[in-house]
Length: 277
Image (tube, rainbow, N blue to C red; front, top):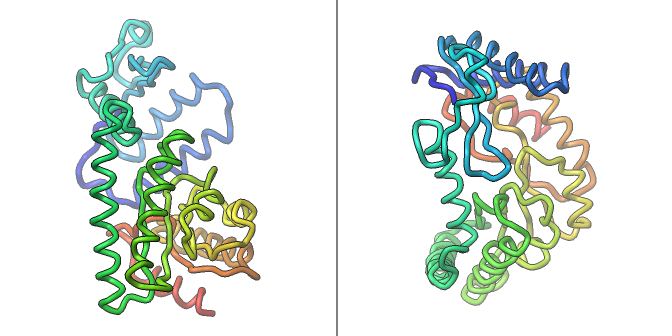
């Protein structure tokens, strides 16, 4: 739980993540890691008050684990039920999102919603193709949060229905599937969805995705958007890794997720020059 000024730049957050990565690499002691993280957050983001609370295994209570303002002897007594207070509300929101996307509370109603989304998405993608698009993409932002059964039911099956519906109206339509965060099942997704290509986010190596898909489809991705913000050696290293791992395979070079507003145009221009070679 951190309160940060609204003017914090993307570069400051990049600096923060870099420092936190360094700390993680230097210690495997969780209490030391959390205390050091508080100090780094204060220094980099220029905030006076910083506390870290972790969600328990029961996912019902947040517990204080480190703080710059609360005495350590008070930490064990500070517990925030999920859904209460400034710290509990985000955790409850995550819990509600998980319940919603799994459809566990009311699977019949959720299935009706998915049916409506399949119909609307099919019509939208067909309209794009009829307007001249060379390819269209099924973008599933929450796929990585699903259980294996939920992934099959709520990600793979709807994607297959959308693809079939699009091709029924536009034979031979080229379709890209992007189940964000679902690298553990991306091979099964590629086979079930009928996509010509699948996208991967920046948290997975494309070499691993190639093994999962057995080069049956083209791959799209997967440069870390923050590497594009950083530029320089971080950008070049990210580009080199992707081009090396995909040297003899079909690749649509792309970011592993959306471009952020703070991205310098010069860095994008360098990326285009490097990829086009």
